[in-house]
Image 1 (cartoon, rainbow, N blue to C red):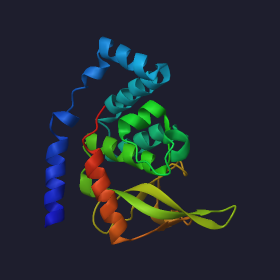
Image 2: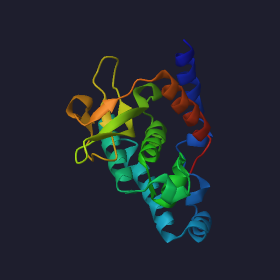
Image 3: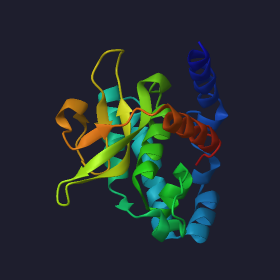
Length: 200
């Protein structure tokens, strides 16, 4: 029951002005000029492309939304947190990810998650999921985050991943092991609540 109430509150929050249909002031000529001055031309171009993909995708089917948003963010460069933020672990919000144009696995998952929510995908169908990814070269399993989409209870999860460009059902991902750990799940939920306040 508490989980259901959390979904209702989250959905209401996303439907407020924070994630409304109107584009924010940042897209006004003066504001985007200030954004470019502060973060550079490449960051400005990424921001404009982001809103273009939102406008292009908002009337599409859920399947097309998943594909378009997954493809958009998978064009960003992979970089470890130590390189990007001089920290061993850092969860970037969506604005930071677009400004940098790079990030590690959880940054891709976070950006896709909040963007799909913004497009109207129900929050109970999306989950940022902790997993282990098999490195085929070294045969080692490394910690990894992906975004999963489940259309209805009992249906197979689709995996939105930065390491595999195509969205595949979990049964096709022999290199991925989903880790079901209540403690990690709680940490992810808490972190998403913190990141919810950030917008672009």
